[in-house]
Image (tube, rainbow over the protein chains, first blue to last red):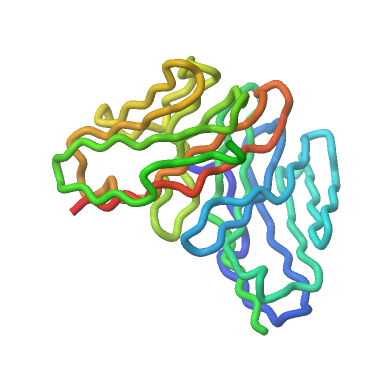
Length: 111
Length: 115
């Protein structure tokens, strides 16, 4: 079974609005990663946050990590139609090798 | 190469046929992963290699699935006697060093359709 669970499952917003997606996981982790996947395409890595980090920024992306709550959030500011995609969080368990994905949040940004 | 390369991009197999899916990771990447992604779902872990060693194969759904990476570079995922439930996109990813806590880079995937 997958470790990460994203919330919401689907999100529809207007261009220019902010989009927030959440991820919860179950065990201790080395790091948490966020990926984007456009329909029919491969996964594109967005950002990696290590277990000793609390917040990271990359352009319009902001990721937070709360290890006490075993949760993370991805904020996309000033969304664009091109941000329409599925977003997945993925966790690498402490002491393990595999990276486990959640089921994803499907974001639709209306122009 | 510049990225992770997978071949073929699309494969249609008749039920019962054997298939082999290839993954060329980024040169020098130690870690290699295989994932299976069903339509509308997140990728499901299949197996992990560190160089040529298969350290985790806990995600392989049955003994019909077999993966190898004999020289620590190119990897092949083989599915014997394919079934309709094997239809999915098979994704390969590589990362630089398991000790360095770095991102994984994904290929475009192989879409397998079993008819």
